[in-house]
Amino acid sequence: MKVGVLALQGDFVEHVHALRRIGVEASEVRLPGQLGVLDGLIIPGGESTTIGKLAIDYEMMEPLRAFGREKAIWGTCAGAIFLSKDARRKQPLLELMDITVERNAFGRQVDSFEVDLNVPALESVDPSGSPYHAVFIRAPLIETVQEDAQSLATLSDGRIVAASQGHWLATVFHPELTSDDRFHRYFLEMIRTN
Amino acid sequence: MEKQVGTFAVKKGLAQMLKGGVIMDVVTAEHARIAEDAGAVAVMALERVPADIRAHGGVARMSDPGLIEEIMEAVSIPVMAKVRIGHFVEAQILESLGVDYVDESEVLTPADEEHHINKHDFKIPFVCGCRNLGEALRRIGEGAAMIRTKGEAGTGDVVEAVRHARAVLGEIRRLQNMPDEELMAYAKNIGAPYEIVRETKELGRLPVVNFAAGGIATPADAALMMQLGVDGNFVGSGIFKSGDPARRAAAIVKATTHFNDPDILAEVSRNLGEPMVGRQVTDIPEMELIAQRGW
Image 1 (cartoon, chains in turn yellow, green):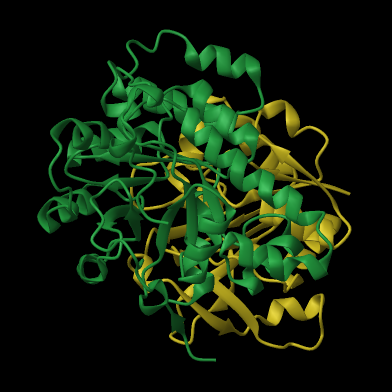
Image 2 (cartoon, chains in turn brown, orange):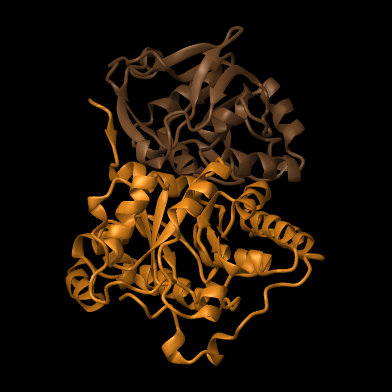
């Protein structure tokens, strides 16, 4: 199995390392021609405005949408914003997932935080069901999920921080910054069952 | 577990999100919007770019909070601001404003020639300059969550940025080949905390994100620094002191992403207009060199 990581900007190297740690062949994707051979794609954390602009400049928007209609995509933080249909402001989006996100929903960097989450969906890759330690950096929030998109994890106050829809996955926190590989393994299962 | 803020993981984490990107010096809200539209990952809010600080002379201090807030309101990307080396009260003020990153910067006039800020005391993250591995690891020891090589700010001459990046990255390569029993003497020689020396050897890189800075003025300069092995670029005077800032800014962003693709680098380097008027570092009297501030 081959998984690509969109490498226009952001913490793509962390995703590549996380994939290699679990024995997956991973490659960096900067141009449309590099998508062809992949079984799935991760869009990393970074600045969503920068990633969107570079995707437009190098004519990646349509190839990414076409890829996403067939194959699995996972977006973390900026990647989750980029996957969404609505970010409540004018900026380039792939408009694949039926989720509405709010950028910088928790405030500025001083409000960035770490917290344990309960993520029942991860029991498919690890039956222990132990809490998932999540790192939120100037994170967005998934305000609402529509159509057949569903929430996978919420904060203790009920706000949504992870969602899936068919073969798409969105997390507003950063599994690539911790050594817990359950979300990466969960995404591989999504690729296999797609 | 209760929610935790201001941890080292979230401080370092924001810098990880900036990787592969360009952080641009801006002096007005309008500059900040031009930078954001060009694809900057963050802006550095300041009253004067380094080239003007050089030209004007006098004491350079933290910028007016009013100006910083105006810039924070103008853009959705992270906003950084500078404090003088050792001036922890300027840093307290920036923390109170809610700035996303503090640059404890040699570009401003140092407030303390002996001691840098104890950055562990703050919830907001700090980036600090360095010229070599020892200096980088001392700053990390004090709590810096991001490092930039100093270069020589406000010159448009990339030679010092190259010298400092090669020094840091070359020393890490030598460290990786060093037997463990030599690490304590090495730490003593370079004046760096032993634990962080050990960690750097194990990782084969700095334990925090490492950008280049100081003299980057063209897309080719930006790509050069990336090929040498840094994680991203700060561009100060190089953009808004050039003939066509928006175009040059966008070109430097593209060159930082596609740093290994000479065809794209050729394309983005075309028709950029006048670059900033540079000043050769070797023509600057030693007393006026900025990089020697701090230790």
